Image (cartoon, rainbow, N blue to C red; front, side, top):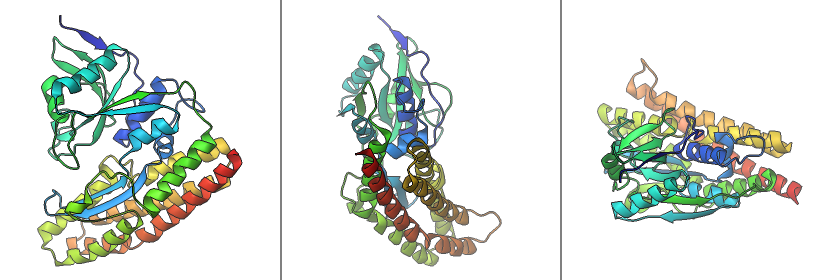
Amino acid sequence: MPHKTLIEGYPHQIGGHCGSGAMRDLLHWHGLGWDGPPSEGLTFTLGGALGLSYLRSNALVPPLYLVGRGADFEVDLPRRLGGQVQVLTTDDPEEGWSWVRDEIDSGRPSLVWGDIAELPYLRVQMQMSRHDIVVIGYDEDAGVAFVVDNDRAEVQEVPFDSLARARSSTSFPQPTRHCTYRITWPSALPSIGGTAAAAFRQSADNLRQPSGARIANLTAASGAEGLAAAEALAADVHTWADLPDDELEILLFGLGAFIEKAGTGGGLFRRLLAEGCAEIARLTGDLATADLARVADRCAQAWTETARAGIRRGADVRARLDAVALAAGRLPKGETDLVDALERASSSLATADR
């Protein structure tokens, strides 16, 4: 018999990043927070997911990829907060949908991956498979699922066939395989100081000595991870001068989009980090964390300036390239300063939490 169900009153807000926006909503839904519902910046920061990957490949459109977070935010955040996570994957669409349906029928929202090109409400052609969305209901008569997305304020009705395609994508950076996160949240949260200390340490390690899971496979292209990625980008930009104007335009536009527009919250996720650190400093009174918030904000601004230099209106493409090269040259120091500040704040909070 056809069935319809919808989780009423789900506390959704537009977000800067799909993962942290979805997790913020889920924490709010479960009544978890330290001083009321957590902000998106705080949620992102406590995931410890800051990272940096850069690669160039003519197999990509545009022919570069830049991302400022690691692969395991959706797993690491709930576990750091005392929860449990199962990551379910399958190539069977019926099995994949059964996981979502069972969660919703039990009154729980379901966090899944979907390719942005297959989600009709986004109206984009570029494929990107690792986009977090939350399914909060479905209507079998109408053949639609009810989806919330950080990029839209309202609940979206997505046809079952569109959602199935989005969840079975084989596009970059990796196949979605109907990925579903089954999360059991804790009844209460651990101390903010100890949680933040661990998150800061993980983010610093992701950049200083990257060794964990990656969003993109760098073995298939020329790329770098962590602090080396900032150096690689700054050096690579100088080689773009050899390209024809039309290819250069694509690279400059793509670079700016990855920094500011591709669900990063601005400044390649560093702005979300700055906001979260400022909130942690307010909650704990920790001076090293307050300093970290300022360093993260400066780093975010350096990335934003790099993006804006490439798309400045009225400027010749070669002049814009020169400006990008100048701005990108400041990024390695900004990233190194950020790692140093993360390590200082982690040590300070860990000492205070003993």
